[in-house]
Image 1: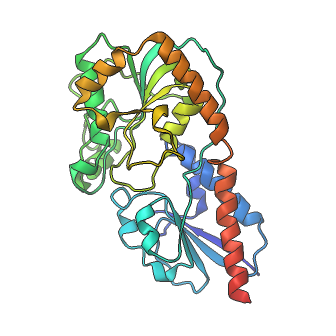
Image 2 (image 1 turned 30 degrees about the vertical axis):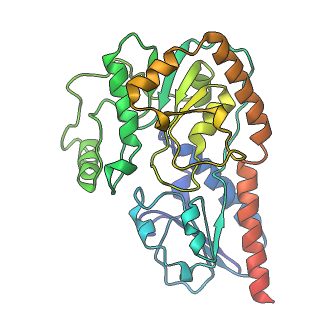
Length: 329
């Protein structure tokens, strides 16, 4: 009997059910993409049992193994230990892995929401993210730190119309490191408290519908999690573009123009500091904002098929099918 086994988690202790849990974290979007992939793999008729690993896992099975990389190794340290020879194919969005012959680059998928042009947007600046940080690595790689700089700048400049959403912002800013992660776990279990001395005036809590918030926003701060991640463009900027909220974006790498046009976003990494960034943003006229927003909605329509959940799943399933047929013959 042909079986499809899925392994997830830190040391392979979980299966595909981990992607079906209800959660309020931004990774819920990623869970939807993986659910689609899992369902398509389950429906596909294969000639041999396989094992699919979400992030690098340990397994003694002799069945063909396929790796779906979901996070950078500085966020998921288990991905320091890929051991490429044990996988028939490795799927991911890290172009630095092209050194492996079995690596297959796939675009980060996106579920596209539609938005209308010429919307009245009451909020000038929005940021939607969790209060987290890198588990390992030098602070120069952390764009979580850059988000915190934006938040703290807006706290000091109350005239700015800025709304912050996401989990964990009642706590102090989370720093890089394993010790910080241990403190977070202890805080969640109410063993210790990481509460801020003073609540953030711009924090609006957790949202149920990201698109509705973005459709009411003129600008959206959507920095990536990590710098120097060659090939990585996550859902953050696509959410912003499809909603017509102008992305204030800190990219992980120098993104090709045909993938993501540079005139579609404001590159926060090009500014000397957060103050100079806001000086620029504050001088963009209302009419320019409307025109820019309308261009983003047009761009979203063009990108919808190219970067979709369906295309992501179809590509991976197709390569696995072809690989198994090739091996059999």
